Length: 333
Image 1: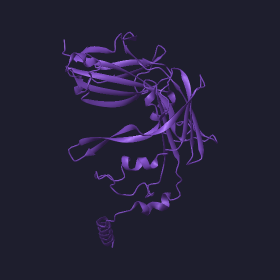
Image 2 (image 1 turned 60 degrees about the vertical axis):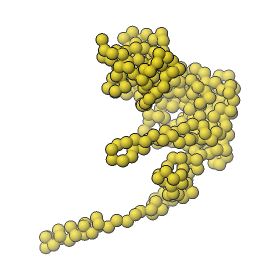
Image 3 (image 1 turned 90 degrees about the vertical axis):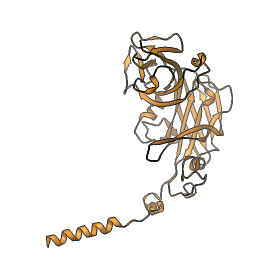
Image 4 (image 1 turned 180 degrees about the horizontal axis):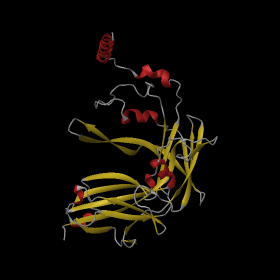
């Protein structure tokens, strides 16, 4: 009898595993059919280039919304419901957006621009691990006036009124200065915006920043040394990579400042004859908390945005300040 039971179980398992059915998203409508769309606001002021400051406002939507996720390759690139097909349909383009300098009281209007930025998407294609880089246009709200400036140690307030949701959203952030690249042994800053390292030197760049800044974006661009002016405007990157770091994950506070670093000694880009342009963006505390947190996007501890009823809103309002240094790699001693 026991043997018969075992054989029956094996037979049923084989039958179940051999049956396949293509499931539609609509099959799960009961699980999230009552989902109500929300607003997500992400604002980033750029101290180093105020004109590139951008505020994105989109609505979330259930994947059962066939008006957005139609399952059709609309642009003929072989991919279905990708960013450039769905994102324009989710953007709130009619909001009223202002940013106010709370020290001076000056209010700046932001207007929607269809091509405000570009989002870089990497696709992993094929079995050989090849990566394809694709840039897609992205809309957002940009400063209407070319007189818009982002000042150090200054608090700014964003105010968004969404006509579509009949909702007002506010948030505040404070801007801090960019990092200073330093000699880690003395904590002294470099006189120029470029340094030279031997190939057998320790391949790491250190910086210090205001103690309120605890997280950073780091971009390393690599170029061949093809002419004498490459450390200036003639720098033409042949490849690049980016990373993010926080003071908690890397170095810590020293002598009353935040210390960070970027290691590049393990990469081929540190070979002799290469020139690296390392750009570090210091994130405001509000923006850093948003980027590095694993909490839900609308958690009150993660988002500094609130609606007219004082409830948290998905997203964040923050600021960054960028600074670059060139590193030329020479042959070992």
